[in-house]
Length: 138
Image 1: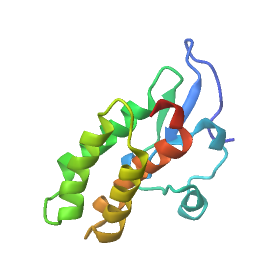
Image 2 (image 1 turned 135 degrees about the vertical axis):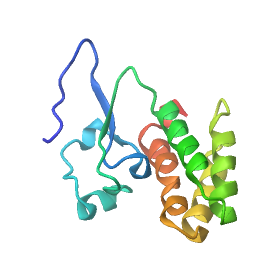
Image 3 (image 1 turned 120 degrees about the vertical axis):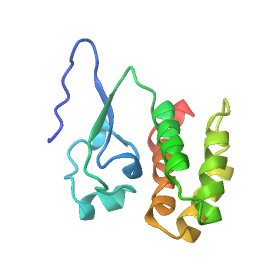
Image 4 (image 1 turned 30 degrees about the horizontal axis):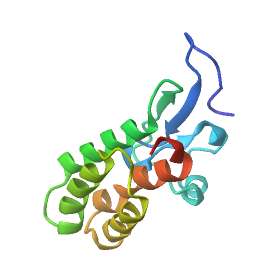
């Protein structure tokens, strides 16, 4: 186990980004997955920037995913519509009280398939992984 489940000042390990925002969020139950491309890929993630971020039980996976999409929205160069408009639309949809899972999944698919660069192709990861592992929050 590379991340130890320990309680620090009343916080318990809940989730982590294995490789920055583009890797999305994985639950603490997957704490034994090695941080390399081949082992993360089957979980819908990848190593990305290798900047590990850890969330505790007092953090919201939903809020973290929204923050990641705001980052992608800001970082999009604007050259391709799937990324530019997709990130903007995702942020709006993710701000709703309840996420429209079907619409978000359709948007994720278009972004992943049609974006020119890796930013637009990876932006759906936080959405998809949050819907998969933290459905109770959305």
